[in-house]
Length: 283
Image 1 (cartoon, rainbow, N blue to C red):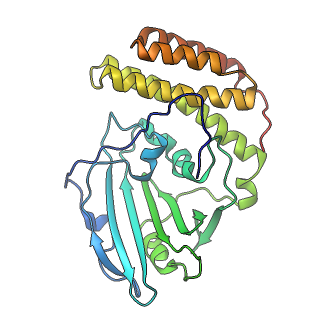
Image 2 (cartoon, one colour):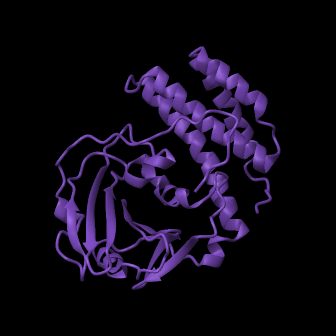
Image 3 (spheres, rainbow, N blue to C red):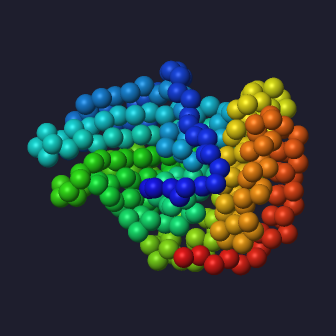
C-alpha cells in the first residue's frame, strides 16, 4: 500500500539476512508437489525476520530464521511463493500479531478495502487481494506468508497450497470477522498499539546501545524514525501538532545528540500515559 508523505525522513528498517543452517528446512517447508504445484526453487533458512521486518520488528536480541520456497503450476502458468519464518518467542514477538498485517493497512493504521479475513478448513487467515493474493497467518511463533501475482485476478487461487500449509502450520490467529476487523474498536486498538509499540521500540534500541550491541548512528536513526510515526499518529488522532517536535528531533539527530532524543522520548511516554485512554475518531 502507498504510504502518506510524512514530515520527517523515514529510515527503512529491514532484516539482515546471513546464511545459517541451524534449523531443518523440512520442518517448515513442503518440498514435494502439492497438487499441480511443483517446487521450482527451495531456499535455505537464513537469519531474518521475513515479512514483519518491514514493520520494524525488533530482532537485535534474538535470532529469527526465514525459509522460502517457490512452486509453479505449468497448466495455469502460475507461480506461488511461500515464506515461513520461525521467531524466537522473545519479548519482541508479543507484537507479531500486530505486525503481520501492517502492510495491509495505510500509514495511519486503517485497513485497506482489499484486506479481508478468510476461514479455510476452520483456520482464520488474513488476506490481501490486489493483482493476486497475499495470505498470512500465525502458527505460534511462526509467521506464514503465501503470495502469487495475477494482474487480471482471473486465475484460480492456489488454495491447495494454502490448505497444505495450514495442515502443516495450523493458524493460531484469533477468530475475527471482517466486520469486526473494520470496526472502530478494532481500528482504535491497532492504532494505539502502534503508538505503544513505537515507544517500546525506542526503549529497546536505547537499551541495546547501552549494552554496546548496536552503534550510535543506527540507534538514533531508528529511534527518530519510530518517534516520527508516534508523533504523526498523535497529530492525526489526538490533534497535537508534530512539526516543531519533528524539527527538533532532526536537529538532535544531525548533531548526534542522543541525550536530547532520549529526553524527548521520556516526555512522550509521560504524555502517552496520561492520554492513551482518551477516545479517538477513526475513519
